[in-house]
Image (tube, rainbow, N blue to C red; front, side):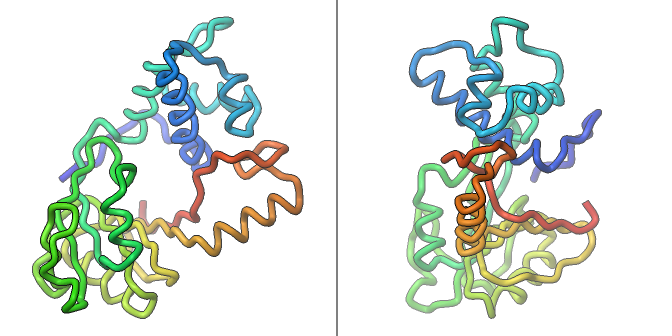
Length: 231
């Protein structure tokens, strides 16, 4: 299980939200055989100013050359290091219905360094099935002390599941259930609710504002309200 990493400076929440978008842009650049990218190009695709890009990336240390931009491969690696992609994370998923099954079968579900270790459900028709190479266990079975848990349960089941996860010493939870849960100090919960994201998107569409801080609406966005306690 991953252990906390000490950093000399903490990044702001808006910067953290933008970094994966910058990384995806740089990855697209590399996939096309291009080696460099500058802050203006990143900003145009991400919907922010070049100044914002440079300020965000300055928090990752000194790299990049004035007039030449950033080495795209180095940029990908620096962002990955900042976001912890160079470490190992054990992930459990609770709720293997349509959404949970789609997530674990997706090639984009796990970041580099993340490893799916266990799946859980309560439906007798699901428990015992093999999904993505893992036999689905009952949620009352022992839960390993993983790094991250993903909750894809119905809303009425979410709190009980989160209580079990915290008891299993899991204190980083990605919650897809449309339910706000109560967690103790030191546990971080990140909510992903598609209906909320659509409302936010419609606000930006109707008001002509950029979801990442720019003045226009762009197609790349990392969204989802973040909630943590004691972190």
